[in-house]
Length: 526
Image (cartoon, rainbow, N blue to C red; front, top):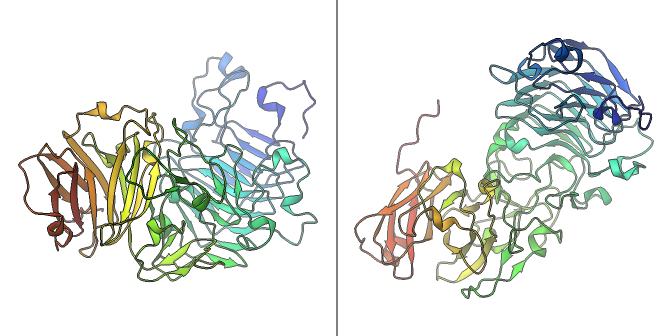
């Protein structure tokens, strides 16, 4: 299928598909699409009808209907992706736009036993609700084999992923038209922010880190993500401070495959109490690649600081993987080892595996009380890691955002029994206006995750005017709330050495909070 330049009927025909499927309520079984200039099989389910149907007055929303049957289809040799469920038409001209296919009433649908190989821009691309993908086979595609976006409870089950089969005279690095080869590093599946069960799959040949050109980390064309080869693509773990969804990735059979490259998280800054200077060490955590920045030129979002490894793909089971070998994360670890497949502790190419427990600090709201899902302040923030003697060991900095689009991507990972101090920059390093949310000293709240056990604890200094008395409420299943109250008593030593939840308000505009898990009962998640 080719496009005769200038003779397309619709805009989407400029890169024509083998099969253009506009209505999901059909039986699509046993079809084959090959040597296609665009997509092999394109599920383009719009929220309205066009052409003769529209002219006849038919009012119908195809995107609300479930896929009837889509199985045993094959796509190979496509210049774009092999199969796509995304980018439907949005007007009569045939312009397309990213829209999620989420059929009513429960967003669920199934596509089974499809095969995609040797496609030049990836295997299967989707932006959907709650799919179940059973028994797929994907091989020899450029970039990623299965990728996109889903809601929670999606399922990728029983798939076979082959990085490069014996039926391939040229590798994915040999794609002649580089404009279609956006992401040549071979990866089997996107993380989907761990919103999908990726279970009982077999991956062959995703060798990744330490194995030649394919292993070298690369930046995406938009300058936002750093990735390298490996089975799962972890370059987009920006949603939470701590990635715990790996427990959903059960039963992986990895043959000559690196489980996945851990993209390093964020920039360290030199320990410095003088707020007039800020030394951003960009090269250490980012492998020298540029990143997206805020108004003042600093990075204003981040990735998960640690990832749980319950099944032992990167090291001993139940350990945590620290992607960034910065002192902020590695200080005072009880033990550490290089995460597979290679590296040294001084240069852990794919992170560090440790049994020490990590927590998440998010929804950082120093000027107003709020819920964890409302995101963090948009002003520049720094979190200092402090040793037991009070010396700053390392610091992490997140620049200003000045928009509401990525407030959920501003967070930190904390080590069990660690000591921290949060600093805000509302002038020198920020042009945002979050303090307008409420006068400083009115209310403040912070969300904490994975710190529910009685043995879970950390100490943190939170900004708060010393002239305004406050009280602190600790929820071991939710977070920290600060509100107005009577002056507390005690000292820094008292709160530091406390064996239960406690706080102390000092005279330098800080409240020191000793957080403990096991204080409130964990709500019944069932």
